[in-house]
Amino acid sequence: MNFTKVEGGGYRIGIPVPFPMQYVYCYLLPKEDAFVLIDTGYNYRKAREAWEEVFRELSLSPGRIEAIFVTHFHPDHSGLADWMQNKTGAPVYMHTLDLQMMEQVWGEGSIQSQRIRVMAERHGVPETLSKEIALHMDKMAETMRPLPSIQKLDHEPVFMGRQWKVLLTPGHSDGMFCLYEESTGTIFLSDLILDPITPNISVWPGTSQRPLHEYFESLEKIRELPINIAYTAHGNPIYHVKERIDELIKHHEKRLSAMETLADHSTVYQIASAIFSHRKLNPHQWRFAIAETIAHMHYLEEEGRVKHITDKHGAITYQQNHQPAT
Image 1 (cartoon, one colour):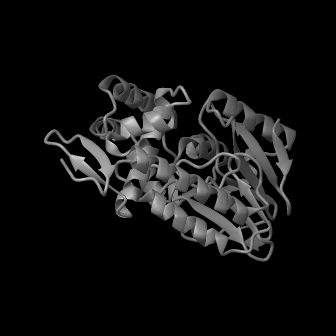
Image 2: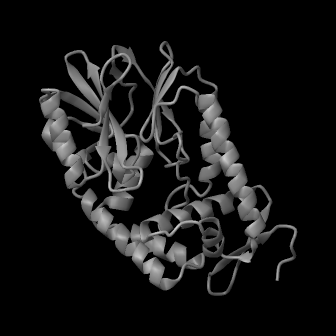
Image 3: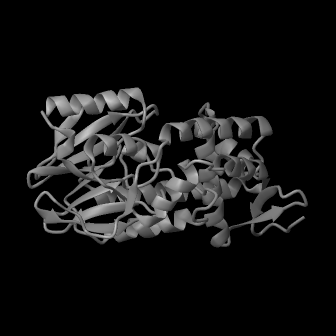
C-alpha cells in the first residue's frame, strides 16, 4: 500500500490511476476525532480496492470522514467522489467554477466530447483521430456517473487544528484551488505545481480561452507565499517551490518559442505532431496534446507573436505575426 504520514498529522495516500503517472495522491487529514479528505481518485476497480485496503490498514471507519474537498473536476481527482460520498455520508465541496464543469463535462446528456471533436477538426485533426478522441472521452464519462451531490466551497476549511485559506489557482482548470496555512508554510497544491512532470495547460470548449496566462498568474500568486512544504497530487512533495516555479515557466517559454517557429501557415495538429514527434500518442494523449497546443497558440496570439487565419470552412491555421496574410 502506498501511503506516508503528513507532517502535522494525517496521511498522503497514493491511489492507482490508469495513466502513466501511476498514482494520484489524496490526503486524509485529521479534524478533532474525525477526518477530511482532499481528492478521491479515478473510478475503477484498482482505486476502489486501494481505498478499502487503506480503511482496513488504518482501522478507519469510512463514516469518520466528515468532509470531502475535490480540488478540481478532472477524473483522477473527482472520479470516486460519488463512491466515497456513499461510503462516508460526507458532503463534497468544489469551487463553483469546477462544480459547473463537472456537470458540463461529465453530467448526463453532456455533449462535451462532440464539442471537443469539432474543436479538434477545426484545428486540423484528421476525422478518424477526432472520432477516436470523442469515443475515448465518452467512455471516460461513463466512469464518472452518477455524479455526487456537490456543494459550493464557500468557507475556509479547518483541519489539522488550523484554518486553511482557499486559493483559486486557475490554469490547469478554471476552478482549481489550493489550500494554504501560513503559520506552518504548508500548502496542498493539487496539480498546480508538480515535480518532475509538468501540469497540462489546455483550452477546452466552455472554459477559459487564455489558460496559460492564468497559469502564469497563479504561479506568481504562489511565489509570493512563504512555503516550507508543498503537497502535490502527483510525484513527490516539493520543498523548493520558487525554484520549481522558475523551471515550469522556462519549460513553457521554451515550448512557446518552438511553437512560434513552427507557425508557418500551420494547423495546431501539424504543430503538435512536430512537438510530440518523439512519442506515440493514443487518443487520450492526443486530446491533451491538441488542447495544450491550442492554449499555447492562444497565448502567442494574445502576445502578438502569431495570428490565426480562418478559412471559409472554419478551418484554422497559424502563422508568425510578421508574415503577410494570404
